[in-house]
Image (cartoon, rainbow, N blue to C red; front, side, top):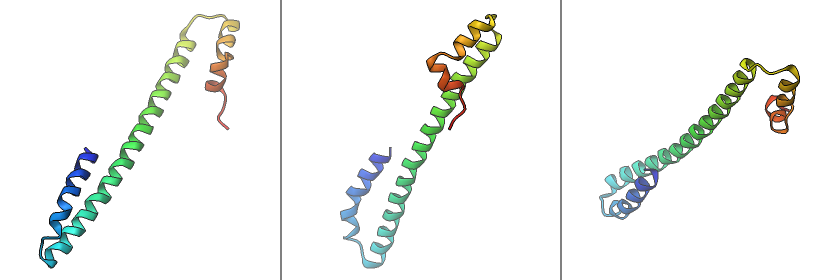
Length: 95
């Protein structure tokens, strides 16, 4: 949607120059403000994607942690799962 809106604004830009001076200033100001809002829209989309990926990673970790906690493994098997190469990164504290 952001790209489409930006394309429409580019098509309207030549029409702004045909306006009287008092309206041309307002139209240019509105154009700049819309471009600024479109840039913020991209930033918001990136933050939303980042947050969604963190939520997904957290839910996978919690699911694994709950599974490991409720499973009837021996202590040795539980330690082996927790110390597996992939799980070392999951269960170790972040630096």
